[in-house]
Amino acid sequence: MATSERRPRDPQARRAALAAAVIEVIAEVGIGRTTHRAVAARAGLPLGATTYYFPTLDDLIAAGLRQATEDLRADLERRAAAFRDTHDLAAALTDLALGYLDDRGQTQIEYELFVAAARDPALRPLAEFWLTGMTELLEPHVGRRTARMLVALLDGAMLHALVTATALDATALTSALRALILAGPREEA
Image (cartoon, rainbow, N blue to C red; front, side, top):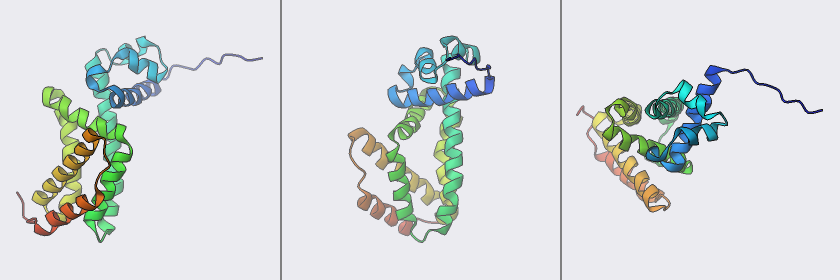
């Protein structure tokens, strides 16, 4: 006999499910087309749960972006050790970019966040973390100014690959990164 087991309502689990769902919806349709209804459906929760935990769509989107930022923070912490141990920073950065592009949805979320933050000052601290996290990770290896240039090059290369739906030219990117690393000043900028 099949019985329907009633799950207890766990507010933390529901918040986490909604944050994860909003990340998926943003990656699929963008921030501008994200709705409470789409997020509730993706999370497998009633529509009322989205507005109960996140009264406005902005609150819901911010929760998802905060979760994506925390995921990025954990990823950067894992990568810090790999960058310390590498003998070829340019190749390691190219591998990082290729890995990010393997999960195009996650990469799209990053760029959605940048565009949304350009319009919404409340989202800027989240976007700024995404921008500064990688710079801070690279700074001990190449200095702040070069780190910022490397991040700009990586972002541009990944954005180009996303927009054109083409593969990243790993050889060209590695060469460009090496040139910046070798030519870049190590002093503060």
